Amino acid sequence: MMTTKHTLAGLVLLSGITLAGTGQAQDTVTLRLHHFAAPTTPVQTQYLEPWAKRVEEQSDGAIKVEIFPAMQLGGSANSLYDQAKDGVVDIAWTLLSYTPNRFPESEAFDQPFLPTTGEATSMAAHEFAMEHMQDDFEGVHPIAVFAHSPGKLHTKDVSVHDIDDIDGLAIRAPSKTMNRYFTRLGAKSVGMPMPQIPEAISRGVIDGLTLPFESASALGVLDVAQNHTFFDGEHGLYTAMMVLAMNQDKYDSLSPELQKVIDDNAGIQEAQQIGHVMDEAEQAAIDDIAARDEGQMIHIAEADQGEWKAAADKTIDEWIADMDAEGYDGQQLYDDANQLVDKYTKQTQ
Image 1 (cartoon, rainbow, N blue to C red):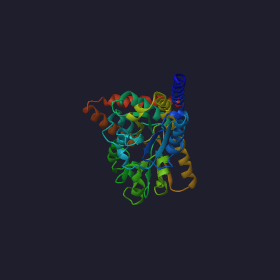
Image 2 (image 1 turned 90 degrees about the horizontal axis):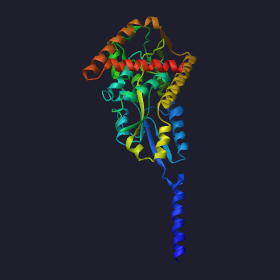
Image 3 (image 1 turned 30 degrees about the vertical axis):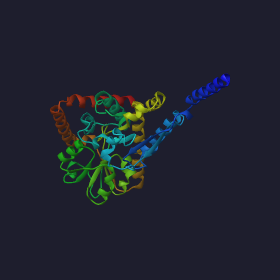
């Protein structure tokens, strides 16, 4: 009887050890990823969905990622960051400019005529954030910080060929800084999250908007806004810093093995990949619109951007002064952003 008991106990113990060493012993962790963009946006179809598949495969199925685009889980785009921080969702993709004054250092990347490619600017944004913004990200575990390809100006009933054409137009801008910039140019700046843009341009609430082509295409606004103004040269008009952020408590609750899976799919290489996806989608959307031969593709040559950049310089100086007044070194932040963009632009050429 004693031998039988010992044998049974040993089998139970051995069984427990064996199960604990397999993926089947772990409960599947489901991560809900929420974002503001359309389900057809390239960041979802060409990055987030492959990312989710990688994470699931590398965890042997112990992690499952469910993606909810277009604010399907409720709330507004402005609430996405706090949804991740507060654990309402597990992961969120959002623009930091959706929460003005919350991430002041990130506004260095909002400044006009700073970005080059999405790939290089995303790498710069990630390194900048890891150096300057760790305290801002308390409560979340950043998977990647990145930036979109330089945005263009899209208008409905008017076309913008030079700086005088912008005067009096109602323009949707993506950030506090770009609102300030367009106001300086004489426009009526209107701030609104991306999901509100299609209705606003269709109803004439705004005359135009700033977006990269890939986002404008995914939203369907290029069927309405058919005049497109490009700013030629290495540096485009603007970008916006974004983050793919995981709730810190959810990350901490994972086993070390599953944390490693997340970490292996996080960092500057992910920022680079997202930026590359955006650049490719940007060019594809531009080629598609050009092939339709609808509307106008207007290019402002770098040599003709003097007045635009003079207004940009004043906007940047104003932001630096504001940051200095808040106790930051605004000039240093702006210089660091520029230097990092330059570094990664040369590295990725």
